[in-house]
Amino acid sequence: MISKHLSWFCRQNRWFLLFSFSIITLLPCCEQEIEIPIPKQEPKYVINCLFQPFTIPYPQNTTVSLKQTIGFLDSLDFPTIDNAIVKMFYEDSLILNLNYDDNSRVYVNAQISNFQPGSYHLQVEHNGEFIDAYDSLPKKVNLKKVTILPFAGRNELDNSYSKINFIFDDPGNEVNYYEISVTYLSITEPFGLFTDFPSIISEPYYPSVLSIDQEDPVALPFTDKSFNGNEVSIPIYYLHPLYAKNDKVEPHTITLHFRTISKNYYNYKVSLLKQGYNIQADIIYGQAESINVFTNIPLNYGVYAGYQTVDQTFDIRNNDFIEYEY
View (cartoon, rainbow, N blue to C red):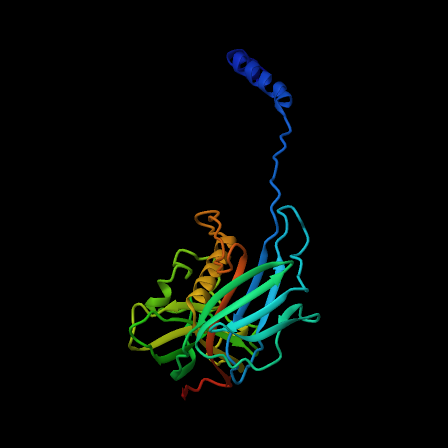
């Protein structure tokens, strides 16, 4: 019975089967190798320097990372340049000569960097080529009060989270830029943060409610366009360490970082966060378009930007409300 049906099907569709077989047999003949010439690109410099004044309790020396780009198909890491002349100027006056350190593989100056607000200029000389970058160090905006509610609620996955409130007076008659981050134990272990503050959730990098697969950002850069010249109270939230499943907060230590940043710093961080999210891609809408990270290094890559910071460490041992005034 099956053979009869098969025979009938073949008779009725013999021209279709013959055409399909012809296409299949011809497919190998259509193969052709095409060489795509990739133009050779001259290497560019990659300069990274985020500078700040000497700040207690976490002072940092001014460092400059200097590397070069590599070819598209190269598998090596960016080569580090160790024989450049690196200088920093304040208002056209030389203030720092930075020397290469073999251990950290960056250019550094050991003296205390007591920078004042104003215009700064970085100059790199290498193989007779000069690269000049500029930025302005903003005036420091201090916090008035910080409050911490160790247990503030639970998210949709039933993980408990804490709430931190930052209160400060924003200077008026100018656009100011800020960044908030929270680290665990040290300055190198950032928490993912979320908020419902309108000025932050409207920033172009902040994940939308549809981005269900995206992690919380580890830094929150934002501007004062919606509250310029006013006192402002900004709430942010972070998940407890170990994702505690009860109402008792796990003992932990956090360091708060409230930064007054330059426009170049802001543009760099926003583009960096946007690029990171686009690389992860959205599972609903598919691959996102690539985003180049902002640079203010002329004809090259990287960033040269200044910031001021208020850092404060808190030991959280229980659910008690914390209030700290400056």
